[in-house]
Structure formats: C-alpha cells, structure tokens
Amino acid sequence: MKIRKIALLLLIAFPSVAASLPVAGTCKLDQEVAGINFGTAVTWKGSDATVATGGNKLSGNVVGLRDHSGGFKLSVRYEDPIMGLSEIIIFEMPSSEPPVHRMATVTYDMVENGERVVSSVNPFEDAVCAVLE
Image 1: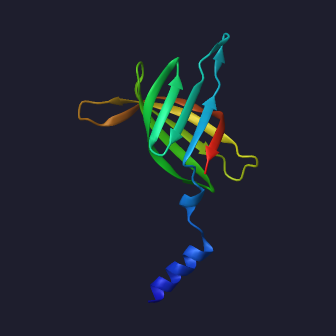
Image 2: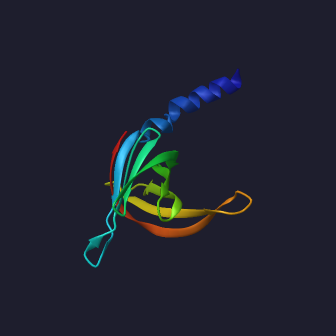
Image 3: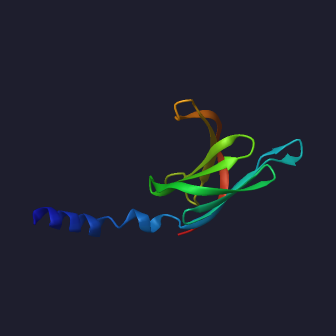
C-alpha cells in the first residue's frame, strides 16, 4: 500500500514525460557545397517517416523517441540507395529558448555474423525543426 501511495505522489509531482514528446514534425538541415544544396529533411508522424536527401525521397521508421533533458531525442532509420542502412538522430538542446535542435546521420554496415556496425558518422549540426506535441 505504501508503494502505491509513493507512486501516485510521483505521478502527481512529475507529469508524464510522454505528454511533451512530439507526435509529428519536420526537421531540416541545409548543407550547401559549391552552390548545390545537399540538405536533408526528415518528416515524421507516429512511427512513419520520410527522409529527403540527395534528391531522393525515402521511407523510414521512427525507431526511438524519448525524453532528452526536458526536450526530445528522435531516431529515424531508413535505407539509403548509396550508403545503405542509415539513421538520423535529432535532439533538442536542453533548456534552450527558443528551442535549438541538432541533427546527425549515422550509416551502418552489416558484418558476416549479422551484427550492425557503424560505417560513417556525419557530425551534429544545427537543424530547423517544427514539431507537433
């Protein structure tokens, strides 16, 4: 009985984190080299995502959405036609007003025993995001 009271007090004192996580949104990373935009955009709703990169529009899946120091962290996995299995990670900088978002891409190789290993990492950069909570 005592444990239930403590759990109830915690729920009242600390509202659900899931309520503040975005259910949908779009994040865009502009990367221009020699006048050509190599930017990446990610749009998600629920567990479905679309990644626009290198002139391609690719289907993806939200594989992680969690609290990140009062903001959120999102992972979207997709199959890139050149790089193969890829994942975009987006997070909101803690305590930033207005919110500042960072985005990076990780690509993977599958080794003989079926393990997934990191092949490349594009560093985190500022992204422009619009999210629906």
